[in-house]
Length: 107
Length: 122
Image 1 (cartoon, chains in turn purple, brown):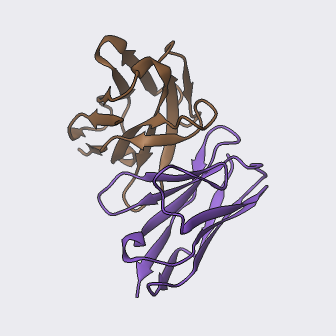
Image 2 (cartoon, chains in turn yellow, brown):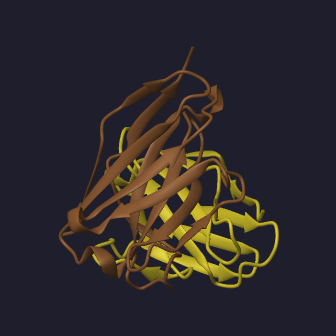
């Protein structure tokens, strides 16, 4: 199975900060990568597909980049509502696999 | 508006089976794949597989192959996930999710149900 490793596991930042989360794949997934946001007690919320395509309704402060084995999710100006855990997911090779998550906290 | 409503929490003993339902509304049920994903406490999501609502074709993660079965009742716009030979490690929140329309079929769980807690305990 393709292992997805996220870093950091937790980050704490202030409102307005630029935040970057990294996701590394154990082998190339080309551009077949998605990002999800999950708040406590809720189902994951699908944010970005194919590395950088934002789902309709997702704020433009979210962006994704990368290819192959290294990817990033960036929040350009962190907002209180962005406090959540973020997961990457590859859909290049079965079984689809998720990262272990990055928890974003607001200082 | 896509809406997936799952059945309620279940408690089972080790070795038993559980069947979770997922009723869809707000779209044409047979046009999309339904994924099943589980999440153990404090862990990332784990993809279990999908079922194509158009024809019943399935794709299972090898980890669950032989122990999980996905089925449909298209007349009721409902998908089912049955997991057998339960172990304590199967204790998790189980989610159904509809495929996202702009991903290649069967790729992206884009619309999620609320989750069903399955607890396996003697």
